[in-house]
Image (cartoon, rainbow, N blue to C red; front, top):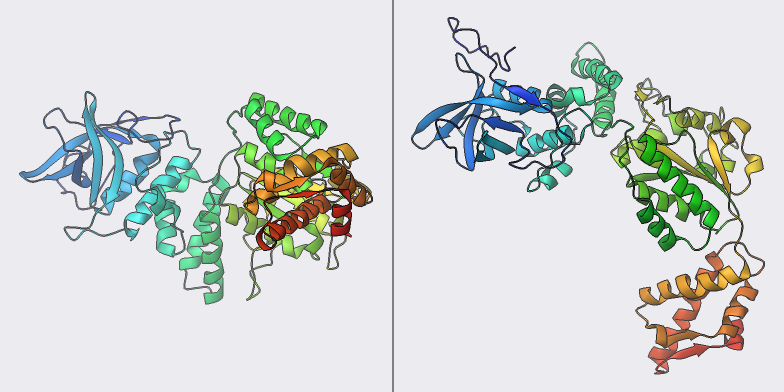
Length: 494
């Protein structure tokens, strides 16, 4: 089957031949050794940067080089399987491009493709930035092909957003098969609505907005690369003091991911008093998994529609908070941090917000009323926090592995203050450790002062107060250093 079949081909031309084979790879960087495609260089060695266009001569699928001494064609020998549609589309639209490649034994190995403007050729939707965006999306997709990233032009694709109908159409033509099947079919239907003149302008606007949201999310499968448990432990020790049971549970999750290359069936529910570092644990897990994270504060959710979005029949319709979280993360694989899960059942509107969370946590897919398409959630790892698990419904509780986080002991609070809270504050205020010294009796006084409060937030505030006072004495009273004893600390904190 030929790659290209242009209408401009002569009627008496012979049936084009396919000269190439496709190859697959899991590499993530395009190099001469791992190229996008390979062109024949047996008759002529091509320059490092060569211009021309993909074309379809009488018998061959090839690239037409525009050299100083004329125009020459070279057969396409191999193509990364994900780029076949893109190259076909570049050829059909007569897009002038510049190839960056290297002459090797197997042929001219192309590892960069840029659009250029000359010869009256039609430019792409957003010129070269759009081409780089499509290439990067193809490379980042989970399609069975080589993954490559354009180093020099990466920032151009990163800033690109699909908003216009033309850019969305072009993306669907070139990279549509990197989308999940249901989203690809949904996008085709919504494109038809957005281009139709038989529907109201409001319907067309909603369809285009929904398309822009969904196309700018990188849809990935649920395959996760192995994670180094030692590095995970280092991050946990860096972020958290103590909490050995919590750390062990997280490391167990990491080992499970390494064995199955999928996320566990259940997320984590961290239950404990305020200020004990539950959110800090969630951020550390996101850092370990190398996933974007988003937060959802259930105490501010009064109506399920805030989570599920509103129907497009309303003029001011918009997607819900959950879908917006996917959009902000820009990826379907993310850590979803649900704060104050015990407040989820206290909605004041119609329905119960906690019921909406069940669909998000079941890994069967989530449907937003505005988008009207099932969003895959197999790559979502939920981590919830709560102060009182008795306020959480049984169905919701069953979706999590529960970890109870007790309050810190007085000795643990002393260590946290002296080795974590105070050094962090001193560094932020640009104070040297020897300029602000807290004696042992002062440590006892600090812990005693906040013995009736849970967590370590008060300790961090105390460290801030003490460091600020030391800075004041150094700057105003011209002291070289300040040593705080028990009476000084009690007076300062009262």
